[in-house]
Amino acid sequence: MSDSPERIPKLSKEEKDRRFQAELMPVLDPLYNFAFRLTLDEDDANDLVQETYLKAYRFFEYFEPGTNAKAWLFRILKNSFINDFRKKSKQPAKVDYSEIEGYYNSEDVEADSDAGSTSTDMRQQAVRDLIGDEVARALNSLPVDFRTVIILCDLEGFTYEEMAKVLDIPIGTVRSRLHRARNFLKEKLEKYAKSMGYGSEGDGEDDFPLTEESE
Image (cartoon, rainbow, N blue to C red):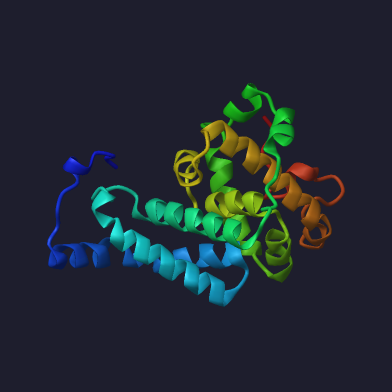
């Protein structure tokens, strides 16, 4: 995306409408799911999606054809959610990551990019298979910044690089935040996981599918 106004191509309304419909509207369902997971309210999710598409249409000339439309829309929605959240709350409840991420050194957060690809795919499938009421409640109870990385990675299948762009944070921060989020979710789901056959005696806690692999 170019920051120079003179480089932004001017589209006719017909061409803009055609491309907008073809490239962005297919993302409607996952965009709504993301909005609902963030807001936990159907009306708020609908409003957030509507606001996202209005902004996307307004700034559609900034969208580069052939790039990831889903990531672009998710970033707009995430920013809209944050801005709206801050307007409604005098003091947003943001997590202090300086302390949390201090527990992980650079080797911890950089080590899993290649070796973890297969296990990441397995985790994503496991999450989809287990996303029942207990899992949903546990996920929804996480602080929003932790909930967001779980949604983007384990439910929507974004890569670390895509997540970094959506969230406007370094890839190392994505990895450490995701690691911590999965641990939070694991703690909340420990009893439920045992009832599903994970983490039983002799299996070891790494058998639980939402846990970060050993590094």
